[in-house]
Image 1: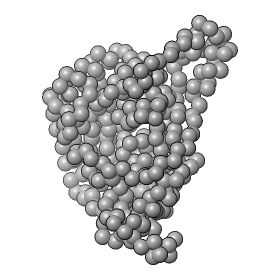
Image 2: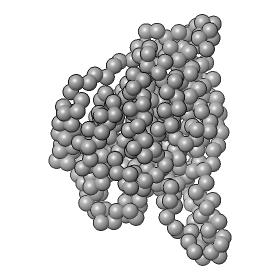
Image 3: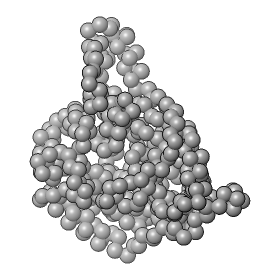
Image 4: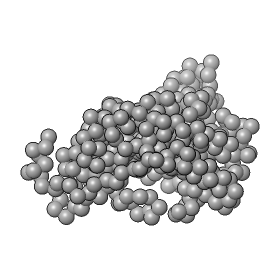
Amino acid sequence: MESINTYLKGRGAQINPHNCFNQQEMVVDVNDILDEEEQLEILQQKQNTKYIEVFPKSIINWVKSPDIPGLYSMNPYQGCEHGCTYCYARPTHEYRGYSAGKEFEQNILIKKNAPQLLRECFEKPNWQSSSIMLSGNTDCYQPAEKKFQITRELLKVCLAFRHPVSIITKNALIARDADVLEQLAALDLVHVTFSLSTLNEDLKRVMEPRTSTAKNVLKTIQLLSEKKIPINVNVAPIIPSINDSEIFDLAKAVSAAGALSIHYIVVRLNDQVEFIFKDWLERNFPDRYQKCIHQIESVHGGSVSDKRTFVRMRGEGNWAEIINKQFKLSQKKYFADKNFPSLDTSIFINDSRRQGKLF
């Protein structure tokens, strides 16, 4: 019989680190007070995902970080079921009273009113067209999107108003919206970025358990590229001793599938992500634990985290320089003859009477 401490398959985080905003925390060792049948029931409950509707007053966020391109982002979901152990967005769930660990994957906040909020924003006479990123925090095509279709409705609003939008995702579900994306692309109104960390399906299954397989991501890149939808790929994050040997293979594969550009980000373990990732690493790759952590520290000045703009995503030191050189070589070899188009901000329609006719 499994105990309450059994590894939760299909989940990335295996712990709920203490919420830094809570002064007190109550801990009960259920293994000491429950029988095996009750323990198994709780274990099954822990794997369930809860969808919780919230009612924001606005959907567009002003991005103030100077090293992140674009001025705005919007997130139809908070929390993410994909379960990526390294996700920098995990600590944002603490503002909502949840843990950055398992609760980040299991308590998904749903913004059903997001399309209407976006429409209202575009209808304001002083709104100036500028690319908006979907999502910038959690994945807009995570499993919840299959049920709620909020991202699809947001794209329809962008199309109606002729407003540019950029998308970043790990999920092949985006192929469902190829019809809307194709129309946006024909007007130079959309960029799609796939975040792909590995071609190793076994590694992907434990590191980011509810994302699409690498095989399906490559198929989706090919599908969208054939429809003239511009695709960029972020190899992110690159983790020493885990996936840093795959750079050339990834570049070759995504280029062959039709991607027009490729970039990368090195791993950084901000705030509670450090404890979630270290726990995951020790459970799954104990033989590499010390080497991996020490290499991450060498990239970020002795720490596993780094909040310095223009440094945090690339790192410093010998390992970071080796990664940078490998990427430059891979870009030269597989992307030299490719160009990534710009988004058009000049055809935005902010007259509500005119845009209604476009549906």
